[in-house]
Image 1 (cartoon, rainbow, N blue to C red):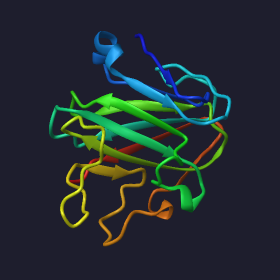
Image 2: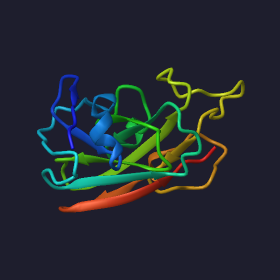
Image 3: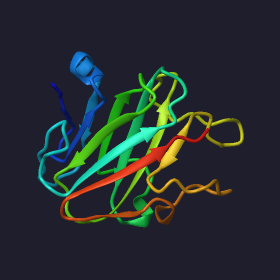
Image 4: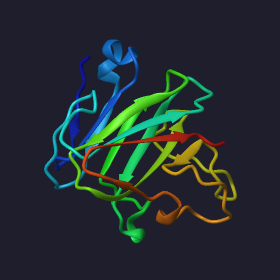
Length: 170
């Protein structure tokens, strides 16, 4: 299975795979390296530990991309522009997708995702500011009448591999 990572100035690797489809469409996957930490890895989530293996399910439309941002344990950074550790964009062409963040330090992290159905590379919202595209957080919290906070999504990544499943919400 082949893969590519697109570096944007750092070396935190965000890696991904999507079943057997990844072998045929690897050039459509994108990982943005946005941190200054040192990390390596591979698309099979076997890179340096700790690793966070993410499964996103409940994908109802096979258009656009699943966009996932990995955040550190600083509450003020969560879901704020310019404060993600890494971003992965994976084609939403199956009922579920999988990807990996690798070579991190053990600690607390949060993952926020959205399904960019129309492919405009934006998380679209309606006229009152609520999500217009499916979204999810690493701990699958219920809806709250406020913007998500780190404590809605935080989890511990230990020295090995941590697996999480995020179910998209509309």
